[in-house]
Image 1 (cartoon, rainbow, N blue to C red):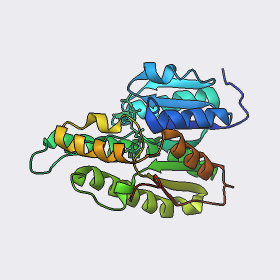
Image 2 (image 1 turned 120 degrees about the horizontal axis):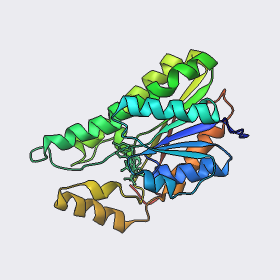
Image 3 (image 1 turned 30 degrees about the horizontal axis):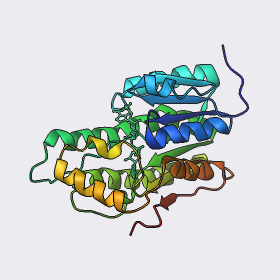
Image 4 (image 1 turned 45 degrees about the horizontal axis):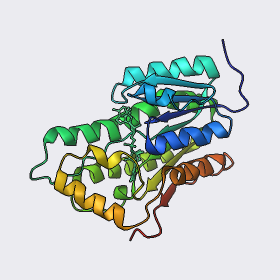
Length: 242
Ligand code: NDP
């Protein structure tokens, strides 16, 4: 049975935490039915949002992503927005870091993002309308020590987003890159190099960093522009971040 909602379906990957969870709340407040994707489905369910389908999906699995999108579109109608936000940051020194961590970052941040794009893009092109928001980072436009592979994955996000925007501009589909500076989330907790992690934590503790709601506000601001307007790239960082 299809649920009638005033706003179209919005999809958020990595909705179980941080920026993704804040974006889910913001889009829900605007009346959108949601598809919330993350591996920890108990956390997306715990957000308690109305008209929200939560599915345990690993974005590195294209079939899982596509199946969840189909299921949500049957419930709520076509997806007008996807926020490709799922990501991992495993900081480290290239001389020592386990290569499995490099693979993980490219798998989730780059390949996983493409799976989100592919699941919605043909429908958006067919309808001649839709918005794809890709979450990159300031580390996707400049470099930092110990960020080599993370930064490489986010430069890829920036490059792919801009190229895709050019590819689909004639089809009415918007592609928006969001590039935040440091935000208080769980992101750093997955870094396994304790010294590098402590360094970055000290930097975060030394200034007032962004909160996830700041990034969610930028995403909804960009999305709420008229369809003829594409905010191609939004870079936002704490005022105190140099
Ligand atoms: P969090 O660690 O708080 O959230 C990351 C989200 O990604 C979680 O919901 C997690 O869900 C999800 N995720 C990770 N791996 C997978 C996977 N394989 N399949 C599905 N979902 C996955 O970090 P943030 O909120 O900070 O990060 C969100 C995005 O923002 C990332 O792309 C990050 O690179 C970017 N960013 C963050 C900045 C910061 O300082 N925090 C700065 C700039 C950019 P689960 O584990 O349940 O699967």
